[in-house]
Length: 378
Image 1 (spheres, rainbow, N blue to C red):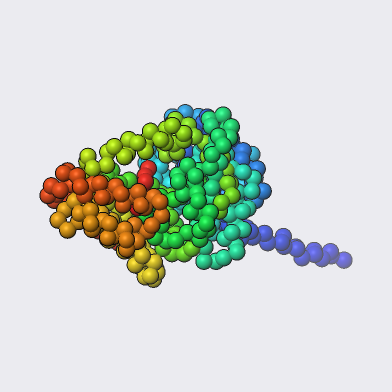
Image 2 (image 1 turned 180 degrees about the vertical axis):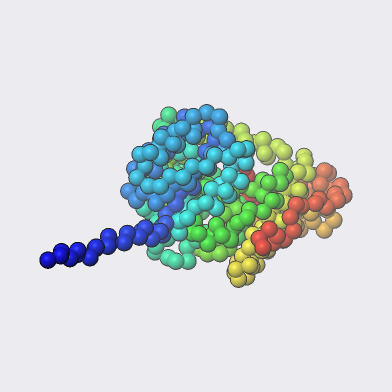
Protein backbone atom coordinates (compact mmCIF):
# COMPACT_ATOMS: atom_id res chain seq x y z
CA UNK A 1 0.00 0.00 0.00
CA UNK A 2 1.41 3.23 -1.09
CA UNK A 3 2.03 5.69 1.57
CA UNK A 4 0.20 8.95 1.55
CA UNK A 5 2.28 11.98 2.34
CA UNK A 6 0.78 14.19 4.94
CA UNK A 7 0.12 17.68 3.70
CA UNK A 8 2.85 20.10 4.52
CA UNK A 9 1.88 22.28 7.39
CA UNK A 10 2.76 25.82 6.45
CA UNK A 11 4.97 27.71 8.84
CA UNK A 12 3.08 30.28 10.79
CA UNK A 13 3.31 33.70 9.18
CA UNK A 14 5.47 36.07 11.11
CA UNK A 15 4.66 39.65 10.29
CA UNK A 16 6.94 42.41 11.51
CA UNK A 17 5.50 44.02 14.63
CA UNK A 18 3.58 47.18 13.93
CA UNK A 19 5.47 50.38 14.52
CA UNK A 20 4.74 51.35 18.07
CA UNK A 21 3.84 54.97 18.66
CA UNK A 22 6.63 56.91 20.30
CA UNK A 23 5.32 58.56 23.43
CA UNK A 24 8.37 60.49 24.64
CA UNK A 25 11.42 61.72 22.72
CA UNK A 26 14.49 63.57 23.94
CA UNK A 27 16.19 65.97 21.53
CA UNK A 28 19.86 66.52 22.36
CA UNK A 29 22.23 68.83 20.51
CA UNK A 30 25.96 68.53 21.04
CA UNK A 31 29.15 70.34 20.14
CA UNK A 32 32.55 69.44 21.61
CA UNK A 33 30.86 68.12 24.73
CA UNK A 34 32.95 65.05 25.56
CA UNK A 35 33.80 66.44 29.00
CA UNK A 36 30.17 66.79 30.08
CA UNK A 37 28.27 64.17 28.07
CA UNK A 38 28.92 61.10 30.24
CA UNK A 39 27.15 62.72 33.20
CA UNK A 40 24.16 63.80 31.12
CA UNK A 41 23.79 60.48 29.31
CA UNK A 42 24.02 58.54 32.56
CA UNK A 43 21.31 60.72 34.06
CA UNK A 44 19.03 60.16 31.05
CA UNK A 45 19.57 56.41 31.30
CA UNK A 46 18.70 56.55 35.02
CA UNK A 47 15.31 58.21 34.50
CA UNK A 48 12.44 56.64 36.42
CA UNK A 49 10.52 56.94 33.16
CA UNK A 50 13.16 56.62 30.43
CA UNK A 51 12.53 58.12 27.00
CA UNK A 52 11.40 56.00 24.08
CA UNK A 53 14.06 57.53 21.88
CA UNK A 54 17.03 59.88 22.12
CA UNK A 55 17.64 61.93 18.96
CA UNK A 56 21.10 63.52 18.88
CA UNK A 57 22.31 66.09 16.39
CA UNK A 58 26.03 66.81 16.69
CA UNK A 59 27.16 70.12 15.24
CA UNK A 60 30.44 68.96 13.63
CA UNK A 61 32.36 68.35 16.86
CA UNK A 62 36.11 67.87 16.57
CA UNK A 63 36.62 66.06 19.88
CA UNK A 64 35.36 62.63 21.07
CA UNK A 65 31.74 63.73 21.40
CA UNK A 66 30.46 61.43 18.66
CA UNK A 67 32.45 58.47 20.00
CA UNK A 68 30.96 59.01 23.48
CA UNK A 69 27.48 59.03 21.95
CA UNK A 70 28.10 55.89 19.93
CA UNK A 71 29.41 54.04 22.98
CA UNK A 72 26.30 55.05 24.90
CA UNK A 73 23.99 53.93 22.10
CA UNK A 74 25.32 50.37 22.36
CA UNK A 75 24.18 49.96 25.96
CA UNK A 76 21.11 52.22 26.09
CA UNK A 77 17.77 50.56 26.80
CA UNK A 78 16.03 52.85 24.30
CA UNK A 79 16.54 53.84 20.70
CA UNK A 80 19.43 56.28 20.15
CA UNK A 81 19.74 57.96 16.76
CA UNK A 82 22.82 60.07 16.06
CA UNK A 83 23.21 62.55 13.22
CA UNK A 84 26.48 64.39 12.63
CA UNK A 85 26.30 67.66 10.69
CA UNK A 86 28.83 68.12 7.91
CA UNK A 87 28.98 71.85 8.70
CA UNK A 88 28.15 73.82 11.80
CA UNK A 89 24.58 75.05 12.02
CA UNK A 90 24.69 76.80 15.38
CA UNK A 91 22.57 75.78 18.36
CA UNK A 92 19.25 77.20 17.17
CA UNK A 93 19.30 75.65 13.69
CA UNK A 94 20.72 72.42 15.09
CA UNK A 95 17.82 72.13 17.53
CA UNK A 96 15.37 72.85 14.71
CA UNK A 97 16.81 69.91 12.79
CA UNK A 98 16.78 67.62 15.84
CA UNK A 99 13.19 68.45 16.72
CA UNK A 100 12.10 67.71 13.17
CA UNK A 101 13.48 64.17 13.51
CA UNK A 102 11.78 63.39 16.83
CA UNK A 103 8.78 61.04 16.58
CA UNK A 104 7.38 61.43 20.07
CA UNK A 105 4.00 62.79 21.05
CA UNK A 106 5.98 64.74 23.64
CA UNK A 107 9.53 66.00 23.20
CA UNK A 108 11.94 67.07 25.95
CA UNK A 109 14.99 69.16 25.09
CA UNK A 110 18.45 68.46 26.50
CA UNK A 111 21.75 70.33 26.70
CA UNK A 112 24.99 68.41 26.77
CA UNK A 113 26.38 69.82 30.02
CA UNK A 114 23.52 69.33 32.51
CA UNK A 115 22.62 66.52 34.90
CA UNK A 116 18.98 65.39 35.02
CA UNK A 117 17.32 64.28 38.24
CA UNK A 118 15.72 60.81 38.04
CA UNK A 119 12.16 62.16 38.28
CA UNK A 120 12.48 64.72 35.47
CA UNK A 121 10.76 62.97 32.57
CA UNK A 122 8.17 61.23 34.75
CA UNK A 123 7.10 64.54 36.27
CA UNK A 124 6.90 66.33 32.93
CA UNK A 125 4.88 63.48 31.42
CA UNK A 126 2.50 63.46 34.41
CA UNK A 127 1.85 67.18 33.99
CA UNK A 128 0.92 66.75 30.32
CA UNK A 129 -1.41 63.88 31.18
CA UNK A 130 -3.35 66.02 33.66
CA UNK A 131 -4.44 68.61 31.12
CA UNK A 132 -4.70 68.17 27.34
CA UNK A 133 -4.57 71.94 26.82
CA UNK A 134 -0.99 72.11 28.11
CA UNK A 135 1.35 72.70 25.19
CA UNK A 136 4.59 73.17 27.12
CA UNK A 137 5.94 72.47 30.61
CA UNK A 138 9.17 73.88 32.00
CA UNK A 139 10.80 73.60 35.41
CA UNK A 140 13.25 75.37 37.65
CA UNK A 141 16.79 74.03 38.02
CA UNK A 142 19.58 73.98 40.57
CA UNK A 143 22.82 75.65 39.54
CA UNK A 144 25.91 73.42 39.71
CA UNK A 145 29.57 74.18 39.05
CA UNK A 146 31.96 72.49 36.64
CA UNK A 147 32.55 69.64 39.09
CA UNK A 148 28.81 69.10 39.64
CA UNK A 149 28.68 70.72 43.08
CA UNK A 150 25.56 72.65 44.09
CA UNK A 151 26.04 76.43 44.04
CA UNK A 152 23.06 77.11 46.29
CA UNK A 153 21.16 79.09 43.64
CA UNK A 154 18.15 78.35 41.47
CA UNK A 155 17.93 79.19 37.79
CA UNK A 156 14.66 81.16 38.02
CA UNK A 157 15.90 83.37 40.85
CA UNK A 158 19.15 84.09 39.06
CA UNK A 159 17.10 85.36 36.11
CA UNK A 160 14.87 87.42 38.45
CA UNK A 161 11.69 85.54 37.50
CA UNK A 162 11.39 83.06 40.36
CA UNK A 163 8.92 84.95 42.56
CA UNK A 164 6.54 85.60 39.68
CA UNK A 165 6.61 82.06 38.27
CA UNK A 166 6.05 80.45 41.65
CA UNK A 167 2.91 82.57 42.03
CA UNK A 168 1.71 82.02 38.46
CA UNK A 169 2.19 78.35 37.48
CA UNK A 170 0.05 78.95 34.39
CA UNK A 171 2.17 81.58 32.70
CA UNK A 172 0.36 84.49 31.02
CA UNK A 173 0.95 84.50 27.29
CA UNK A 174 1.92 88.15 27.07
CA UNK A 175 4.79 87.60 29.52
CA UNK A 176 6.49 85.24 27.05
CA UNK A 177 6.15 87.98 24.46
CA UNK A 178 7.90 90.49 26.71
CA UNK A 179 10.92 88.54 27.96
CA UNK A 180 12.78 85.25 27.86
CA UNK A 181 11.45 83.02 30.64
CA UNK A 182 12.38 79.50 29.62
CA UNK A 183 15.61 77.61 29.21
CA UNK A 184 15.49 74.82 26.63
CA UNK A 185 16.96 72.12 28.86
CA UNK A 186 14.13 72.55 31.38
CA UNK A 187 11.25 72.25 28.91
CA UNK A 188 9.13 69.70 27.07
CA UNK A 189 6.53 70.38 24.38
CA UNK A 190 3.72 68.60 22.60
CA UNK A 191 4.20 67.73 18.96
CA UNK A 192 1.72 70.37 17.85
CA UNK A 193 4.10 73.05 19.12
CA UNK A 194 6.93 71.74 16.95
CA UNK A 195 4.65 71.55 13.95
CA UNK A 196 3.39 75.11 14.47
CA UNK A 197 6.88 76.46 15.13
CA UNK A 198 8.48 74.86 12.06
CA UNK A 199 10.20 76.03 10.01
CA UNK A 200 11.97 78.51 12.26
CA UNK A 201 11.82 82.00 10.71
CA UNK A 202 15.03 83.52 9.40
CA UNK A 203 14.53 86.68 11.44
CA UNK A 204 15.45 84.70 14.56
CA UNK A 205 19.05 85.03 13.34
CA UNK A 206 18.98 88.85 13.09
CA UNK A 207 22.11 89.93 15.02
CA UNK A 208 20.30 93.01 16.34
CA UNK A 209 18.02 90.80 18.43
CA UNK A 210 18.91 87.12 18.29
CA UNK A 211 16.14 84.76 19.30
CA UNK A 212 17.11 81.24 20.27
CA UNK A 213 15.12 78.08 19.78
CA UNK A 214 13.72 77.94 23.31
CA UNK A 215 12.30 81.48 23.17
CA UNK A 216 10.65 80.80 19.80
CA UNK A 217 9.16 77.52 21.00
CA UNK A 218 7.85 79.26 24.12
CA UNK A 219 6.16 81.99 22.09
CA UNK A 220 4.46 79.48 19.82
CA UNK A 221 3.54 77.16 22.71
CA UNK A 222 1.87 80.02 24.57
CA UNK A 223 -0.03 80.95 21.41
CA UNK A 224 -1.39 77.44 20.73
CA UNK A 225 -2.06 76.22 24.26
CA UNK A 226 -1.27 76.57 27.95
CA UNK A 227 2.24 76.78 29.37
CA UNK A 228 2.86 75.49 32.88
CA UNK A 229 5.82 76.38 35.09
CA UNK A 230 6.99 73.79 37.63
CA UNK A 231 8.80 75.30 40.63
CA UNK A 232 10.45 71.97 41.44
CA UNK A 233 14.02 71.77 40.08
CA UNK A 234 14.33 68.82 37.69
CA UNK A 235 18.00 69.06 36.83
CA UNK A 236 21.35 70.50 37.72
CA UNK A 237 22.12 73.39 35.34
CA UNK A 238 25.88 73.50 34.94
CA UNK A 239 27.56 76.91 35.01
CA UNK A 240 30.93 77.07 33.27
CA UNK A 241 32.86 79.54 31.10
CA UNK A 242 32.51 77.67 27.80
CA UNK A 243 28.71 77.35 27.74
CA UNK A 244 26.98 79.19 24.89
CA UNK A 245 24.10 80.54 26.95
CA UNK A 246 24.19 80.56 30.68
CA UNK A 247 23.61 82.63 33.79
CA UNK A 248 25.56 85.16 35.80
CA UNK A 249 25.83 84.76 39.55
CA UNK A 250 27.14 86.89 42.38
CA UNK A 251 29.47 89.70 41.40
CA UNK A 252 29.24 88.78 37.72
CA UNK A 253 25.54 89.58 37.67
CA UNK A 254 25.98 92.82 39.63
CA UNK A 255 28.71 93.97 37.25
CA UNK A 256 26.64 93.09 34.18
CA UNK A 257 23.61 95.02 35.48
CA UNK A 258 25.81 98.02 36.24
CA UNK A 259 27.31 97.99 32.74
CA UNK A 260 23.84 97.77 31.21
CA UNK A 261 22.63 100.69 33.32
CA UNK A 262 25.55 102.85 32.21
CA UNK A 263 24.78 102.19 28.55
CA UNK A 264 21.18 103.39 28.82
CA UNK A 265 20.72 106.54 26.77
CA UNK A 266 24.22 106.42 25.24
CA UNK A 267 23.42 104.34 22.17
CA UNK A 268 20.42 103.88 19.89
CA UNK A 269 20.99 100.14 19.58
CA UNK A 270 17.73 99.32 21.43
CA UNK A 271 15.78 101.03 18.64
CA UNK A 272 16.73 98.30 16.17
CA UNK A 273 16.29 95.61 18.83
CA UNK A 274 12.68 96.65 19.48
CA UNK A 275 11.90 96.68 15.76
CA UNK A 276 13.26 93.17 15.30
CA UNK A 277 11.49 91.93 18.43
CA UNK A 278 8.23 93.29 17.05
CA UNK A 279 8.72 91.43 13.79
CA UNK A 280 9.52 88.20 15.64
CA UNK A 281 6.33 88.51 17.69
CA UNK A 282 4.32 89.17 14.54
CA UNK A 283 5.79 86.02 12.99
CA UNK A 284 4.69 84.00 16.02
CA UNK A 285 1.23 85.57 15.78
CA UNK A 286 1.08 84.48 12.15
CA UNK A 287 1.73 80.88 13.18
CA UNK A 288 -1.11 81.07 15.73
CA UNK A 289 -3.49 82.48 13.14
CA UNK A 290 -2.72 79.65 10.74
CA UNK A 291 -4.22 77.16 13.20
CA UNK A 292 -7.09 79.39 14.27
CA UNK A 293 -5.84 80.75 17.61
CA UNK A 294 -6.86 84.32 16.80
CA UNK A 295 -7.24 85.60 20.36
CA UNK A 296 -3.76 84.42 21.26
CA UNK A 297 -2.39 85.93 18.06
CA UNK A 298 -4.01 89.23 19.04
CA UNK A 299 -2.12 89.23 22.34
CA UNK A 300 1.19 88.76 20.52
CA UNK A 301 0.36 91.52 18.06
CA UNK A 302 -0.52 93.94 20.86
CA UNK A 303 2.88 93.37 22.49
CA UNK A 304 4.50 93.75 19.05
CA UNK A 305 2.77 97.14 18.74
CA UNK A 306 4.27 98.10 22.10
CA UNK A 307 7.72 97.16 20.81
CA UNK A 308 7.16 99.36 17.75
CA UNK A 309 6.27 102.22 20.10
CA UNK A 310 9.41 101.62 22.16
CA UNK A 311 11.48 101.83 18.98
CA UNK A 312 10.21 105.42 18.57
CA UNK A 313 11.24 106.58 22.05
CA UNK A 314 12.82 110.03 21.87
CA UNK A 315 11.09 111.02 18.64
CA UNK A 316 8.33 113.69 18.52
CA UNK A 317 5.30 112.43 20.40
CA UNK A 318 7.29 109.69 22.09
CA UNK A 319 8.99 111.54 24.92
CA UNK A 320 9.09 110.76 28.65
CA UNK A 321 5.45 111.74 29.19
CA UNK A 322 4.36 109.21 26.54
CA UNK A 323 6.43 106.51 28.25
CA UNK A 324 4.92 107.29 31.65
CA UNK A 325 1.44 107.27 30.14
CA UNK A 326 2.09 103.85 28.60
CA UNK A 327 3.35 102.58 31.96
CA UNK A 328 0.21 103.92 33.69
CA UNK A 329 -1.86 102.01 31.10
CA UNK A 330 0.07 98.83 32.01
CA UNK A 331 1.59 98.54 28.57
CA UNK A 332 4.80 97.69 30.44
CA UNK A 333 2.77 95.14 32.48
CA UNK A 334 3.67 96.42 35.97
CA UNK A 335 6.04 93.72 37.26
CA UNK A 336 9.47 94.83 38.56
CA UNK A 337 11.44 94.02 35.41
CA UNK A 338 8.89 95.82 33.24
CA UNK A 339 9.11 98.89 35.47
CA UNK A 340 12.89 98.82 35.03
CA UNK A 341 12.29 98.77 31.26
CA UNK A 342 9.95 101.76 31.55
CA UNK A 343 12.56 103.67 33.58
CA UNK A 344 15.17 102.89 30.92
CA UNK A 345 12.84 104.23 28.23
CA UNK A 346 12.30 107.47 30.16
CA UNK A 347 16.08 107.86 30.34
CA UNK A 348 16.37 107.24 26.61
CA UNK A 349 13.61 109.71 25.86
CA UNK A 350 15.67 112.39 27.62
CA UNK A 351 18.91 111.42 25.84
CA UNK A 352 20.16 113.66 22.99
CA UNK A 353 21.10 110.52 21.04
CA UNK A 354 17.46 109.49 20.89
CA UNK A 355 16.10 112.91 19.96
CA UNK A 356 17.90 112.93 16.61
CA UNK A 357 15.85 111.86 13.54
CA UNK A 358 16.28 108.15 12.84
CA UNK A 359 15.21 106.44 9.61
CA UNK A 360 13.26 103.18 9.95
CA UNK A 361 15.45 100.10 9.86
CA UNK A 362 14.68 97.13 7.60
CA UNK A 363 13.66 93.91 9.29
CA UNK A 364 14.29 90.58 7.64
CA UNK A 365 10.88 88.91 7.50
CA UNK A 366 7.36 90.27 7.06
CA UNK A 367 4.59 89.59 9.57
CA UNK A 368 3.53 85.96 9.77
CA UNK A 369 5.87 84.78 7.01
CA UNK A 370 7.76 81.53 6.85
CA UNK A 371 5.08 78.86 7.38
CA UNK A 372 3.26 77.66 3.95
CA UNK A 373 20.98 84.91 24.05
CA UNK A 374 18.77 87.29 25.08
CA UNK A 375 16.90 89.45 27.49
CA UNK A 376 13.55 90.54 26.17
CA UNK A 377 12.56 94.10 26.81
CA UNK A 378 9.62 94.65 29.11
